[in-house]
Length: 364
Image 1 (tube, rainbow, N blue to C red):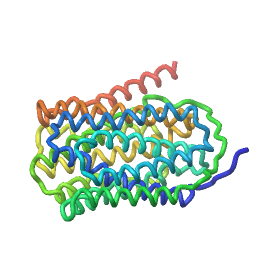
Image 2: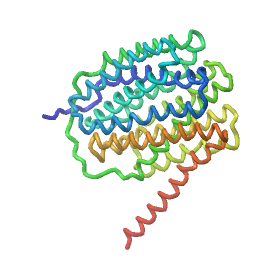
Image 3: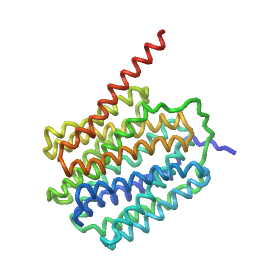
């Protein structure tokens, strides 16, 4: 039996909001704590692999999971992260890596379970609405987390995160409605590639830029403020997209890719606030890709297949931006942005050539 569900349940939005409060606060602390423990850029970059791989593996697991079990999966991930947040309070270097691995596996189950549930909803703006619910906290969490770390330390930040996960668990709907969605086509890979560039940008932002600020000796409040500005640009973009009609995916893909290439200029200038500005432009592109490309994927593929596309491309980019970006940054500094962020520009040029070639063939 299928159920009509014309909008996102309010509880799911509240759950997503609180989960993002917990996750973004916890994630912000990972790289700062790693710098405190003496990890290099390369080693911190490897944490991005621990973030990315579970997204691919869990999305594959979803092919075998029925929709009726999705809410249980989301609740289980929230409860598990509540416990992980409490364990982080011990501030123990010996279990630091294990806790990060556990946190990344659990967050993958939450986000992917939620993305699949969105695919079963009839609301055409479901992706944009849900993205906006956690987009706001993407801005607030670094700033608030920096203040908490500066004033009262890591343990309190971990405790606050744990409580946020507990609230997310309480508000997650026990039964998610669904509709049967007929898929008339398959998504074109050329339109999904901006998710790869999004992963590169976010991987560089989280696992290279934030540690860079910490190694400069800036205090946590300043790091939180600098880290929050790109997220502010992202949250504003998410909000705007809720009130605008979706542009053609070809145009959206090109615009997102061009914006995501902005950090390529960092090899010329890397004043702190220029870095923040270019990463803010890139985050605008990332928000467009997250919301619009997700909406495109869910409209052209089955829920499980769509999420696999979405997470796989994003995760591959995340590995490039974090692990490869960290290794390159360790060796050549800001020249590392050249191979990382010139890729979206090359893609836009190649995509335009492909479209022109398609147009010529259609006229023959």
